[in-house]
Image: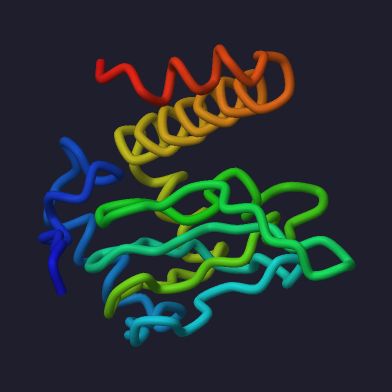
Length: 162
């Protein structure tokens, strides 16, 4: 696996005590799962009842329409939270399918255990809100780029190195 994250250094846990992270780890409502290259981690439309933390590897998030056409939304490398805004939503379903691009390791935490941790740790709550806000901004920019910019503008943006 090319990308690896020390759990204590995961951006979600920035400025949180090791004790609070260990308490979440020891919760009976979580597990570590490994996925081989090409394996599906989440399926578009499936219920999102847990928080998925990509600890190692990289994944591809993609949407599929009824005719089977695929659109790659994003490629992500660890450390990353997969679909954080949907765990507590009124329609808590994965908006995309997620597939491992390389061997990957994911820590899956139940939403109830994570909610308890959020209530007990204001730093964790602030970090989670920042992650959701940053993802919303990213998706807003992606939508603007996809829907509102001309093809030539998108091509120039793609070719210009920031």
